[in-house]
Image (cartoon, rainbow, N blue to C red; front, side):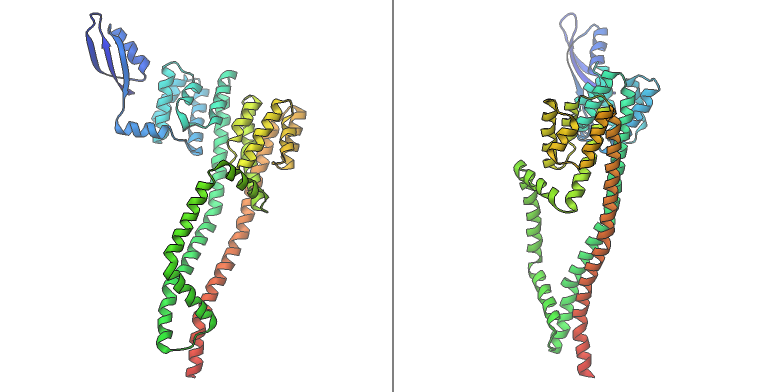
Length: 403
Protein backbone atom coordinates (compact mmCIF):
# COMPACT_ATOMS: atom_id res chain seq x y z
CA UNK A 1 0.00 0.00 0.00
CA UNK A 2 1.03 3.61 -0.63
CA UNK A 3 0.57 6.75 1.44
CA UNK A 4 -1.38 9.53 -0.30
CA UNK A 5 -1.52 13.20 0.72
CA UNK A 6 -4.89 14.78 -0.04
CA UNK A 7 -6.60 18.15 -0.09
CA UNK A 8 -10.41 18.12 0.07
CA UNK A 9 -13.34 20.38 0.94
CA UNK A 10 -16.52 19.54 2.88
CA UNK A 11 -20.10 20.57 2.15
CA UNK A 12 -19.49 23.92 3.87
CA UNK A 13 -16.47 24.73 1.73
CA UNK A 14 -14.01 24.13 4.57
CA UNK A 15 -10.58 22.90 3.44
CA UNK A 16 -9.22 19.60 4.82
CA UNK A 17 -5.72 18.17 4.40
CA UNK A 18 -4.24 14.88 5.51
CA UNK A 19 -2.93 11.51 4.42
CA UNK A 20 -4.43 8.08 3.80
CA UNK A 21 -2.95 4.68 3.06
CA UNK A 22 -4.42 2.89 0.06
CA UNK A 23 -3.59 0.83 -3.01
CA UNK A 24 -4.45 3.55 -5.53
CA UNK A 25 -5.45 7.17 -5.97
CA UNK A 26 -8.90 6.05 -7.11
CA UNK A 27 -9.56 4.25 -3.81
CA UNK A 28 -8.39 7.31 -1.82
CA UNK A 29 -10.90 9.52 -3.66
CA UNK A 30 -13.59 6.92 -3.00
CA UNK A 31 -12.80 6.91 0.76
CA UNK A 32 -12.93 10.72 0.87
CA UNK A 33 -16.36 10.76 -0.80
CA UNK A 34 -17.58 8.20 1.74
CA UNK A 35 -16.59 10.77 4.41
CA UNK A 36 -18.65 13.45 2.59
CA UNK A 37 -15.48 15.18 1.40
CA UNK A 38 -14.87 16.39 -2.14
CA UNK A 39 -11.29 15.54 -3.17
CA UNK A 40 -9.36 18.41 -4.76
CA UNK A 41 -5.88 16.91 -5.03
CA UNK A 42 -4.56 13.44 -4.22
CA UNK A 43 -0.84 12.81 -4.49
CA UNK A 44 1.28 9.80 -3.54
CA UNK A 45 3.99 10.46 -0.97
CA UNK A 46 7.33 8.81 -1.67
CA UNK A 47 10.13 8.06 0.76
CA UNK A 48 13.74 7.97 -0.40
CA UNK A 49 13.61 4.18 -0.71
CA UNK A 50 10.39 4.39 -2.73
CA UNK A 51 11.94 6.99 -5.02
CA UNK A 52 14.86 4.64 -5.50
CA UNK A 53 12.45 1.80 -6.31
CA UNK A 54 10.51 4.03 -8.72
CA UNK A 55 13.79 4.86 -10.44
CA UNK A 56 14.63 1.16 -10.65
CA UNK A 57 11.21 0.22 -12.03
CA UNK A 58 11.74 2.59 -14.95
CA UNK A 59 14.91 0.76 -15.89
CA UNK A 60 14.88 -2.43 -17.91
CA UNK A 61 14.23 -5.68 -16.13
CA UNK A 62 16.87 -8.28 -16.97
CA UNK A 63 15.98 -11.43 -18.93
CA UNK A 64 16.15 -13.43 -15.70
CA UNK A 65 13.86 -10.98 -13.87
CA UNK A 66 11.40 -10.93 -16.78
CA UNK A 67 11.30 -14.74 -16.90
CA UNK A 68 10.77 -15.00 -13.13
CA UNK A 69 8.03 -12.34 -13.04
CA UNK A 70 6.24 -13.71 -16.11
CA UNK A 71 6.41 -17.37 -15.06
CA UNK A 72 4.86 -16.60 -11.67
CA UNK A 73 2.21 -14.42 -13.32
CA UNK A 74 1.31 -17.21 -15.76
CA UNK A 75 1.09 -19.90 -13.05
CA UNK A 76 -1.03 -17.82 -10.66
CA UNK A 77 -3.28 -16.46 -13.42
CA UNK A 78 -3.93 -19.97 -14.75
CA UNK A 79 -5.22 -20.99 -11.31
CA UNK A 80 -8.12 -18.55 -11.73
CA UNK A 81 -6.98 -15.92 -9.23
CA UNK A 82 -7.89 -12.32 -10.23
CA UNK A 83 -4.98 -10.45 -11.79
CA UNK A 84 -4.80 -7.75 -9.08
CA UNK A 85 -4.62 -10.46 -6.40
CA UNK A 86 -2.00 -12.32 -8.46
CA UNK A 87 0.22 -9.23 -8.44
CA UNK A 88 -0.28 -8.76 -4.68
CA UNK A 89 0.76 -12.37 -4.03
CA UNK A 90 3.71 -11.99 -6.39
CA UNK A 91 4.95 -8.87 -4.58
CA UNK A 92 4.80 -10.74 -1.26
CA UNK A 93 6.53 -13.90 -2.51
CA UNK A 94 9.47 -12.39 -4.38
CA UNK A 95 12.74 -11.39 -2.70
CA UNK A 96 13.76 -9.29 -5.73
CA UNK A 97 13.18 -5.61 -4.88
CA UNK A 98 12.77 -4.53 -8.50
CA UNK A 99 10.16 -7.23 -9.23
CA UNK A 100 8.37 -6.33 -6.00
CA UNK A 101 8.21 -2.65 -7.02
CA UNK A 102 7.00 -3.44 -10.54
CA UNK A 103 4.32 -5.85 -9.27
CA UNK A 104 2.96 -3.29 -6.80
CA UNK A 105 2.88 -0.53 -9.40
CA UNK A 106 1.10 -2.79 -11.90
CA UNK A 107 -1.46 -3.69 -9.22
CA UNK A 108 -2.01 -0.03 -8.43
CA UNK A 109 -2.72 0.71 -12.11
CA UNK A 110 -5.12 -2.24 -12.35
CA UNK A 111 -7.08 -1.02 -9.31
CA UNK A 112 -7.41 2.34 -11.08
CA UNK A 113 -9.18 0.55 -13.94
CA UNK A 114 -6.34 0.03 -16.41
CA UNK A 115 -5.73 -3.22 -18.28
CA UNK A 116 -2.45 -5.12 -17.79
CA UNK A 117 -1.07 -3.92 -21.13
CA UNK A 118 -1.95 -0.30 -20.30
CA UNK A 119 -0.32 -0.67 -16.88
CA UNK A 120 2.84 -2.13 -18.43
CA UNK A 121 3.05 0.79 -20.87
CA UNK A 122 3.08 3.28 -17.96
CA UNK A 123 6.30 1.77 -16.56
CA UNK A 124 8.50 3.14 -19.33
CA UNK A 125 11.64 1.10 -19.91
CA UNK A 126 10.85 -1.63 -17.37
CA UNK A 127 9.35 -3.84 -20.10
CA UNK A 128 10.67 -4.17 -23.68
CA UNK A 129 8.43 -3.47 -26.74
CA UNK A 130 8.15 -7.23 -27.41
CA UNK A 131 6.61 -7.78 -23.97
CA UNK A 132 4.14 -4.92 -24.35
CA UNK A 133 2.96 -6.00 -27.82
CA UNK A 134 2.63 -9.66 -26.83
CA UNK A 135 0.60 -8.93 -23.68
CA UNK A 136 -1.68 -6.61 -25.68
CA UNK A 137 -2.26 -9.39 -28.22
CA UNK A 138 -2.89 -11.89 -25.41
CA UNK A 139 -5.56 -9.65 -23.87
CA UNK A 140 -7.24 -9.16 -27.26
CA UNK A 141 -7.35 -12.90 -27.96
CA UNK A 142 -8.41 -13.85 -24.43
CA UNK A 143 -5.37 -16.11 -24.05
CA UNK A 144 -3.32 -14.00 -21.65
CA UNK A 145 -2.22 -16.95 -19.48
CA UNK A 146 -0.98 -18.88 -22.54
CA UNK A 147 0.82 -15.83 -23.91
CA UNK A 148 2.50 -15.15 -20.56
CA UNK A 149 3.64 -18.78 -20.45
CA UNK A 150 5.17 -18.39 -23.94
CA UNK A 151 6.87 -15.16 -22.86
CA UNK A 152 8.28 -16.86 -19.76
CA UNK A 153 9.72 -19.65 -21.94
CA UNK A 154 11.19 -17.05 -24.29
CA UNK A 155 12.99 -15.08 -21.58
CA UNK A 156 14.13 -18.22 -19.76
CA UNK A 157 15.73 -19.52 -22.98
CA UNK A 158 17.22 -16.11 -23.70
CA UNK A 159 18.75 -15.85 -20.21
CA UNK A 160 20.03 -19.44 -20.48
CA UNK A 161 21.76 -18.78 -23.82
CA UNK A 162 23.39 -15.59 -22.51
CA UNK A 163 24.58 -17.46 -19.42
CA UNK A 164 26.08 -20.28 -21.50
CA UNK A 165 27.91 -17.83 -23.77
CA UNK A 166 29.26 -15.88 -20.77
CA UNK A 167 30.50 -19.06 -19.10
CA UNK A 168 32.11 -20.22 -22.36
CA UNK A 169 34.01 -16.94 -22.67
CA UNK A 170 34.91 -16.59 -18.98
CA UNK A 171 37.99 -18.85 -18.99
CA UNK A 172 39.55 -17.37 -22.18
CA UNK A 173 39.05 -13.83 -20.82
CA UNK A 174 40.66 -14.70 -17.47
CA UNK A 175 43.50 -16.50 -19.26
CA UNK A 176 44.12 -13.49 -21.51
CA UNK A 177 44.12 -10.97 -18.65
CA UNK A 178 46.42 -13.08 -16.47
CA UNK A 179 48.83 -13.75 -19.36
CA UNK A 180 49.08 -10.06 -20.27
CA UNK A 181 49.55 -9.16 -16.60
CA UNK A 182 52.39 -11.72 -16.26
CA UNK A 183 54.21 -10.43 -19.36
CA UNK A 184 53.89 -6.77 -18.31
CA UNK A 185 55.07 -7.64 -14.78
CA UNK A 186 58.15 -9.40 -16.18
CA UNK A 187 58.98 -6.43 -18.40
CA UNK A 188 58.37 -3.74 -15.78
CA UNK A 189 59.69 -5.35 -12.60
CA UNK A 190 61.84 -8.43 -13.30
CA UNK A 191 63.90 -7.25 -16.30
CA UNK A 192 65.07 -3.96 -14.66
CA UNK A 193 66.43 -5.89 -11.64
CA UNK A 194 68.36 -8.29 -13.87
CA UNK A 195 69.74 -5.39 -15.94
CA UNK A 196 71.31 -3.90 -12.80
CA UNK A 197 73.22 -7.13 -12.20
CA UNK A 198 74.62 -7.26 -15.74
CA UNK A 199 75.50 -3.55 -15.73
CA UNK A 200 77.60 -4.04 -12.58
CA UNK A 201 79.49 -6.87 -14.32
CA UNK A 202 80.04 -4.77 -17.47
CA UNK A 203 79.17 -7.78 -19.63
CA UNK A 204 78.31 -7.46 -23.34
CA UNK A 205 74.67 -8.57 -23.67
CA UNK A 206 73.15 -10.64 -26.52
CA UNK A 207 71.00 -8.85 -29.11
CA UNK A 208 67.74 -10.44 -27.89
CA UNK A 209 68.46 -9.31 -24.32
CA UNK A 210 69.24 -5.74 -25.43
CA UNK A 211 65.95 -5.62 -27.38
CA UNK A 212 64.05 -6.85 -24.32
CA UNK A 213 65.75 -4.24 -22.12
CA UNK A 214 64.89 -1.52 -24.65
CA UNK A 215 61.23 -2.66 -24.62
CA UNK A 216 61.24 -2.66 -20.81
CA UNK A 217 62.71 0.87 -20.70
CA UNK A 218 60.15 2.07 -23.25
CA UNK A 219 57.22 0.67 -21.23
CA UNK A 220 58.57 2.16 -18.00
CA UNK A 221 58.93 5.58 -19.62
CA UNK A 222 55.72 5.57 -21.68
CA UNK A 223 53.49 2.87 -20.15
CA UNK A 224 51.07 5.30 -18.52
CA UNK A 225 50.79 7.37 -21.69
CA UNK A 226 50.17 4.26 -23.80
CA UNK A 227 47.41 3.13 -21.41
CA UNK A 228 45.80 6.60 -21.58
CA UNK A 229 45.99 6.65 -25.39
CA UNK A 230 44.36 3.20 -25.60
CA UNK A 231 41.62 4.25 -23.16
CA UNK A 232 41.02 7.49 -25.10
CA UNK A 233 40.90 5.56 -28.39
CA UNK A 234 38.29 3.16 -26.98
CA UNK A 235 36.14 6.03 -25.66
CA UNK A 236 36.40 7.95 -28.95
CA UNK A 237 35.52 4.79 -30.90
CA UNK A 238 32.42 4.31 -28.73
CA UNK A 239 31.34 7.91 -29.28
CA UNK A 240 31.96 7.75 -33.03
CA UNK A 241 30.00 4.48 -33.31
CA UNK A 242 26.98 6.25 -31.82
CA UNK A 243 26.74 8.19 -35.10
CA UNK A 244 24.21 6.19 -37.13
CA UNK A 245 25.95 6.47 -40.51
CA UNK A 246 29.30 5.40 -39.04
CA UNK A 247 27.66 2.54 -37.11
CA UNK A 248 25.92 1.37 -40.28
CA UNK A 249 29.17 1.26 -42.27
CA UNK A 250 31.01 -0.46 -39.42
CA UNK A 251 28.29 -3.09 -38.89
CA UNK A 252 28.10 -3.82 -42.62
CA UNK A 253 31.90 -4.27 -42.69
CA UNK A 254 31.90 -6.57 -39.64
CA UNK A 255 29.43 -8.91 -41.36
CA UNK A 256 31.99 -9.43 -44.16
CA UNK A 257 34.82 -10.41 -41.78
CA UNK A 258 35.47 -14.19 -42.00
CA UNK A 259 34.34 -16.26 -39.00
CA UNK A 260 33.49 -13.23 -36.79
CA UNK A 261 30.99 -11.92 -39.35
CA UNK A 262 29.32 -15.32 -39.60
CA UNK A 263 29.02 -15.61 -35.81
CA UNK A 264 27.47 -12.12 -35.54
CA UNK A 265 25.07 -12.88 -38.41
CA UNK A 266 23.88 -16.18 -36.91
CA UNK A 267 23.63 -14.73 -33.37
CA UNK A 268 21.47 -11.82 -34.58
CA UNK A 269 19.41 -14.16 -36.76
CA UNK A 270 18.63 -16.45 -33.80
CA UNK A 271 17.51 -13.45 -31.69
CA UNK A 272 15.38 -12.03 -34.50
CA UNK A 273 13.67 -15.30 -35.44
CA UNK A 274 13.00 -16.26 -31.80
CA UNK A 275 11.39 -12.86 -31.18
CA UNK A 276 9.39 -13.10 -34.41
CA UNK A 277 8.25 -16.59 -33.38
CA UNK A 278 6.86 -15.46 -30.02
CA UNK A 279 5.08 -12.50 -31.66
CA UNK A 280 3.66 -14.69 -34.44
CA UNK A 281 2.37 -17.32 -31.99
CA UNK A 282 0.70 -14.51 -30.01
CA UNK A 283 -1.10 -13.36 -33.19
CA UNK A 284 0.66 -9.99 -33.37
CA UNK A 285 0.16 -8.41 -36.82
CA UNK A 286 3.09 -9.22 -39.16
CA UNK A 287 4.12 -5.62 -39.88
CA UNK A 288 4.14 -4.71 -36.20
CA UNK A 289 5.93 -7.98 -35.35
CA UNK A 290 8.72 -7.24 -37.85
CA UNK A 291 9.32 -3.74 -36.47
CA UNK A 292 9.39 -4.98 -32.87
CA UNK A 293 11.62 -7.97 -33.70
CA UNK A 294 14.06 -5.72 -35.58
CA UNK A 295 14.84 -3.91 -32.31
CA UNK A 296 16.60 -7.00 -30.89
CA UNK A 297 19.15 -6.87 -33.74
CA UNK A 298 22.40 -5.38 -32.43
CA UNK A 299 23.75 -5.09 -35.98
CA UNK A 300 22.39 -1.91 -37.57
CA UNK A 301 22.90 -3.21 -41.11
CA UNK A 302 20.67 -6.22 -40.39
CA UNK A 303 18.12 -4.01 -38.63
CA UNK A 304 17.80 -1.76 -41.67
CA UNK A 305 17.44 -4.85 -43.86
CA UNK A 306 14.46 -5.98 -41.76
CA UNK A 307 12.90 -2.51 -41.89
CA UNK A 308 13.27 -2.59 -45.68
CA UNK A 309 11.74 -6.09 -45.76
CA UNK A 310 8.77 -4.87 -43.70
CA UNK A 311 8.04 -2.25 -46.37
CA UNK A 312 8.05 -4.99 -49.01
CA UNK A 313 5.64 -7.08 -46.90
CA UNK A 314 3.36 -4.04 -46.64
CA UNK A 315 3.37 -3.86 -50.44
CA UNK A 316 2.26 -7.50 -50.72
CA UNK A 317 5.47 -9.52 -50.73
CA UNK A 318 5.75 -12.69 -48.64
CA UNK A 319 7.97 -12.59 -45.56
CA UNK A 320 10.44 -15.15 -46.94
CA UNK A 321 10.82 -13.35 -50.29
CA UNK A 322 11.27 -9.97 -48.59
CA UNK A 323 14.00 -11.28 -46.27
CA UNK A 324 15.70 -13.22 -49.09
CA UNK A 325 15.81 -10.10 -51.26
CA UNK A 326 17.78 -8.24 -48.58
CA UNK A 327 20.47 -11.00 -48.61
CA UNK A 328 21.23 -10.37 -44.95
CA UNK A 329 20.09 -13.64 -43.39
CA UNK A 330 21.39 -17.19 -43.99
CA UNK A 331 19.74 -18.95 -46.94
CA UNK A 332 18.45 -21.74 -44.71
CA UNK A 333 16.51 -19.17 -42.68
CA UNK A 334 14.54 -17.85 -45.64
CA UNK A 335 14.00 -21.38 -47.00
CA UNK A 336 12.53 -22.59 -43.70
CA UNK A 337 10.29 -19.50 -43.42
CA UNK A 338 9.10 -20.09 -46.99
CA UNK A 339 8.27 -23.69 -46.08
CA UNK A 340 6.28 -22.49 -43.07
CA UNK A 341 4.33 -20.01 -45.20
CA UNK A 342 3.52 -22.70 -47.77
CA UNK A 343 2.31 -25.20 -45.17
CA UNK A 344 0.39 -22.63 -43.12
CA UNK A 345 2.49 -23.40 -40.02
CA UNK A 346 4.63 -20.25 -39.96
CA UNK A 347 4.69 -19.93 -36.15
CA UNK A 348 5.86 -23.51 -35.66
CA UNK A 349 8.47 -23.19 -38.40
CA UNK A 350 9.79 -19.96 -36.87
CA UNK A 351 10.15 -21.79 -33.53
CA UNK A 352 12.08 -24.61 -35.23
CA UNK A 353 14.27 -22.14 -37.14
CA UNK A 354 15.07 -20.20 -33.97
CA UNK A 355 16.00 -23.41 -32.13
CA UNK A 356 18.24 -24.46 -35.04
CA UNK A 357 20.11 -21.13 -35.03
CA UNK A 358 20.45 -21.08 -31.23
CA UNK A 359 22.12 -24.49 -31.35
CA UNK A 360 24.32 -23.21 -34.18
CA UNK A 361 25.40 -20.24 -32.02
CA UNK A 362 26.30 -22.55 -29.13
CA UNK A 363 28.26 -24.84 -31.47
CA UNK A 364 30.12 -21.86 -32.97
CA UNK A 365 30.94 -20.48 -29.53
CA UNK A 366 32.25 -23.86 -28.35
CA UNK A 367 34.37 -24.24 -31.50
CA UNK A 368 35.76 -20.70 -31.28
CA UNK A 369 36.67 -21.11 -27.61
CA UNK A 370 38.20 -24.52 -28.36
CA UNK A 371 40.46 -22.93 -31.00
CA UNK A 372 41.22 -19.76 -29.04
CA UNK A 373 42.32 -21.37 -25.77
CA UNK A 374 45.23 -23.49 -27.09
CA UNK A 375 46.20 -20.71 -29.53
CA UNK A 376 46.38 -18.19 -26.69
CA UNK A 377 48.41 -20.59 -24.56
CA UNK A 378 50.87 -21.11 -27.43
CA UNK A 379 51.24 -17.37 -28.12
CA UNK A 380 51.64 -16.35 -24.48
CA UNK A 381 53.90 -19.34 -23.82
CA UNK A 382 56.07 -18.27 -26.76
CA UNK A 383 56.33 -14.71 -25.42
CA UNK A 384 57.30 -15.93 -21.94
CA UNK A 385 59.83 -18.34 -23.51
CA UNK A 386 61.49 -15.47 -25.41
CA UNK A 387 61.71 -13.43 -22.18
CA UNK A 388 63.20 -16.37 -20.27
CA UNK A 389 65.76 -17.04 -23.05
CA UNK A 390 66.72 -13.35 -23.10
CA UNK A 391 67.33 -13.52 -19.35
CA UNK A 392 69.21 -16.83 -19.34
CA UNK A 393 71.51 -16.23 -22.35
CA UNK A 394 73.76 -13.69 -20.56
CA UNK A 395 73.94 -16.02 -17.55
CA UNK A 396 75.08 -18.93 -19.75
CA UNK A 397 77.68 -16.70 -21.46
CA UNK A 398 78.96 -15.52 -18.08
CA UNK A 399 79.30 -19.13 -16.89
CA UNK A 400 81.28 -19.99 -20.04
CA UNK A 401 83.67 -17.08 -19.39
CA UNK A 402 84.19 -18.19 -15.80
CA UNK A 403 84.82 -21.78 -16.95
